[in-house]
Image (cartoon, rainbow, N blue to C red; front, side, top):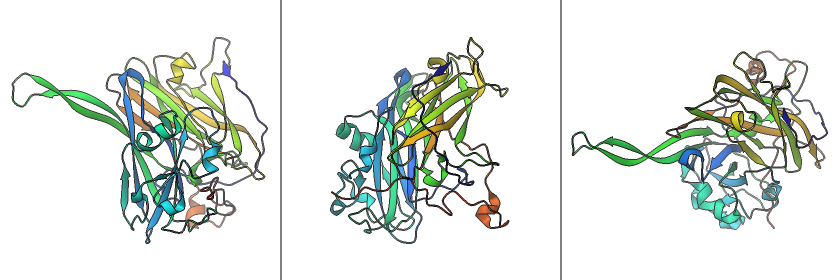
Length: 364
């Protein structure tokens, strides 16, 4: 059973291995693949806080864009600064938070419920989406978008506002209801850690990611999401396929492999809510995995950069307490490349060719 929407034409450009998520989080371009200000299943109510830490020895500025969820083209976000959040009015961002300007070395900025604060009302859009974070040396952003690149670490906390019952300290054997939160960390993904449709060779394939910990039943539910982090002119065809704990693919009644095909317009983000049950008709299982793969892309760009990032989330059905499932490449990190030990032919994704997919837009 395959859900098909469309399939594009494949263009291949070979790149070599890059690092996985293991601790490499600093960058001048980072995506938070999901951020929320919305209601969810089982009475949940989600918000997102963002933490930004300057790892440079000079002050930096940060600019943030929001990509609303859905299989819709969000390329307009990279056409102007109208919906970007920045720290300086002179830079003509549509949204301003002065804390994003002149972040000192080792300094951290915390933005509370930023999706609800800035974008839900502005865009009239879904309260789910992705964040794009660009960082640069303070006050170096030019009208044409050029700047002095500097690095930041970005992490989000996505949490559900709830209540819980605790023992009343003033009355024995009585309980009172108090506010509570259940949340998960969603680390920012640097552009060099995206799955790359062009990073395919004889001994490696970084065009897909693996999500583990698949489980669904009365106790838990499992969500899968993906963001098209390509350049603003490239659409992706992404296949999402579940596998059993024994490594075999799930099959439908016709003994065909079950999967879902998504055609993702430029800069789109999409989440499958409980796909095992709602998309694939699979219930009551433990230890499944999900492969999220770039199968094809179409583009109007002269040099397409087909990239994506995925995530999973395991959520308890009673408490709505979530756990993040980070993606992993199926191939190991190239240690000799990074640490200069082997002098081999392989290079990091971006060491020889700049694969940074997007930039801050020019001023009008």
